[in-house]
Length: 416
Image (cartoon, rainbow, N blue to C red; front, top):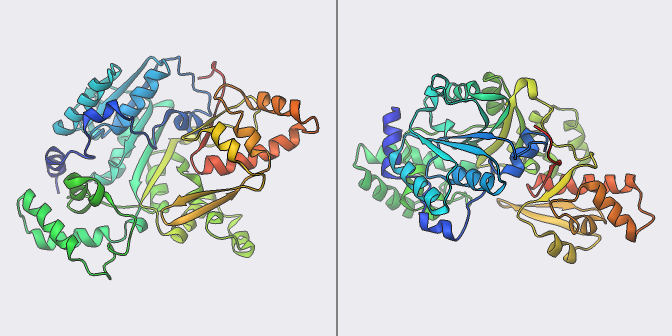
């Protein structure tokens, strides 16, 4: 299928379906692209957002990533420009209306193919967000290389690609629709898909996959994007690693990290011992096969020469902890010393044991106080507490919360 066919789809069915009036009620947030997360993984927590910052949203669609980034950068007082790039006029108009509803003036809109970026003169960019786009390109490797070519030397990217195993049933449905629609007009194709969905036997793979819901929650646009897309492929972890390295990049982390850790799903020491010495990407590939429910892969990448140097350091007592989507004061009040955090991961309940001091630590996280200050305040009421004990318990707390996407670190301004 041609790029024109893909573009026509998004003109007819802008995705995801969004109503600009909803901007008065909520800000759609997620990963990749949340600036605390971006700072933690791509800039070692040391990005100074008082300095100019250029971001590219490549394949902006109806605007979720663009609006989230622009709003958060504006709230941070950052002199930023967010460049929205997409070929769909209908999608762009929705994003523009959302930006207008919020009074955002830091977005620039361009209509262009990702492949034309290197010759456009629009780069370089400190951060590039490309979510759910590369897997719809005829040449995903060429698309990623084009993005790498306009990335600033000290920058990084947040990407999302479909996962193969967690989308079991989707590609069976796509295959059936190709046999059924036989060039039918778009409205008839949607009707045919709905009719087929209503008549799937209980043995069908899609009926047996309870975690595929875009066709239920996203209206006709969600149904079309899921089952009638003209170009759609999915990836496993090793394929992603090859794609990324082919563009001279390296993966920093997958989101959420706990999903890619075999120890999340099994606790047999003999099995885990055999995996301990494996490279982390091999362990991530094992976890993907083990879990079987990863519908998409969200991950951050940096140029190869920055690999291993961009993660915020949880052992640095100057780090300021930031909770995400969690009220620390309320949580600390309910904390029990023997607590285990439970998190649903698409049908699997992840259980992470927490150290006894977790409540006292979380209750003091105000997005301003560094770990050193939290430790000193805790020692005021517990003179026996030493820094080594604090550091060990914070490490356990950090692994649990960060692994679930709930805790990030930053450092005082003065960095990059």
